Length: 377
Image (tube, one colour):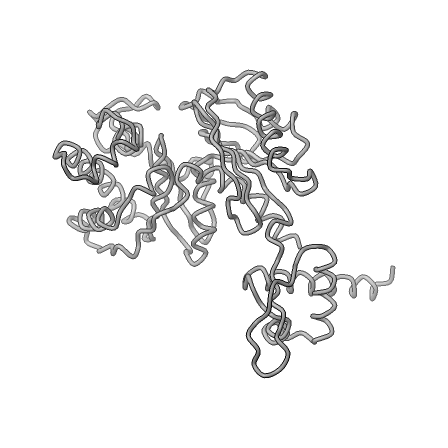
């Protein structure tokens, strides 16, 4: 093929990508708006819209109000054109979710199943994944991939768990799962997956510190709109910041780690009841003991947030299992105690609260393949 022919193909591909990406960002738009904003010719836009519609990537869905002439078609992407599967592996269960191209969770499920580093475990988990896909009647070609978030720091190539003391899954490899699945597979630390979801939901944030308030505490650092991994992949492991050298024993072998004060497990242990019951009784405001336990929890969280904010001058994101339980009064209380001894004030507008609860890592993991797909069009 001639150089000119190759150039024409490249230009057509670029234009197609521009039009699709524009529709994706706008969510709903019109042909006229695309022409104006992308400064493309009407015939070029029309041709690309026809091709994208023929490929099933976009659709017309209703009309805009008339401004004097014919009503313009409302154009959108087909959000479920492709589906990504996310898995959140925990010690005694795993979460599974399917997300569309906007990262919306279409289905979620929690399956009680204790982790064990055995072929039978991986076979049963992957069988459940295939069953989940079949139950929801997803055609195989619709599935972008299966992304797995695990409690463990992964290798730079995301093929192996390098540190997995919580689940005793050090050495777990991606192939343990992928050998049973007919889809691309990916492995990520659950905290990094959660941070990716929060960044997806807050694209305006250039930097942030993420507190993943799950059964076990986790964290992540966002800088320059990217998840900071670090030279050894353990950036953001705020759970092992020592706040009391004589404190409770942490699973890492040290004492007084933030994990032992601010994980959901630590809160349950202090309260002597499960999280759902704790918050139900706490909000009734009839138990001074439970109120004090919650205040102690928030004090420790505020202490960590204050110190991390001195190092990373950025907003804070509260994410994960406990996040949906936070009220505005809790954020105000946190802000007040962060600012008591900090020379630099942090306002409550700089604290964001996630909404996806326990499914946050699984959804964030699924977004890996969604992000790949959107940028490949």
